[in-house]
Length: 322
Ligand code: UDP
Ligand code: BGC
Ligand code: MN
Image (tube, rainbow, N blue to C red; front, side, top):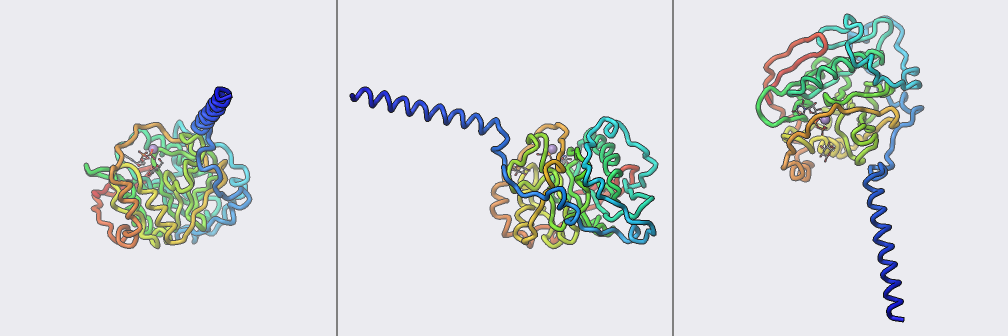
């Protein structure tokens, strides 16, 4: 009798352990362990969320306004070899990496800000692909490469702050903060701002096209210039890898701006391979106390030296000491 109960207990325990192991394997292998349900704008909701705003030179054009509904409806795949190999019709691009369509008036002006240091191969691939991609969107854009020209640990957030100041001086109403190694794969991810700041790269191939956590706000983000100023930009204190995008998300939330994302089929990105950068050991500590510094650390405490500004054929190059 005693033996029987013991044996049955053993079987039950064994079964539970087996089920737990299988569940654990499924958890690791399957993508549902990522933020499974997150809110996003459905394809039919995207257009009305876009904020139409252009710089004054574009607003003075006397052409019919450009149409975007086909781009949004079709959401075609653009990650094709013909767009990756070389810049097509390069003569259309203005010095400094600026473009606007000539047969219609663009309804969006966007400054694409890219923080950069020593990623030559990625930069080349980025510029080729992005100019081929962006011109198909019929927007007005300019690519600003903000290069950290010192030996200090890389400071991604500070480079975005610097880029935002320059883009604001040039009247750009919309900022897209963009890693140099990320390429959008579908045309429907319009490089324009939405009412709410938008996390654009939410379906990234290295995360198997799913979102690791609901608060991920790195990679590629669109934010209106006045909103970026309102939240005091990003923190200047994150040196090395990690945390600065989480701090940025916390700022957006604490100022009650909210965020949005597009349907995942519009948010597909691929990341060019690279080694993992050295992690900032201090990032968790900084992040925990970050809320205390939202109003004192950011655009209003930004100090840097601009060493040089050059208009290259595919981008505006800003060299800075941080
Ligand atoms: N970056 C750079 N040089 C560096 C480190 C970072 O240009 O030495 C820029 C680059 O734009 C890169 C971004 O910062 O895409 C984010 O860094 P990383 O790609 O290492 O982070 P991940 O998002 O892949 O974790
Ligand atoms: C880091 C972020 C990073 C994210 C995804 C987080 O742990 O704090 O900076 O973007 O991981 O890699
Ligand atoms: Mn990367």
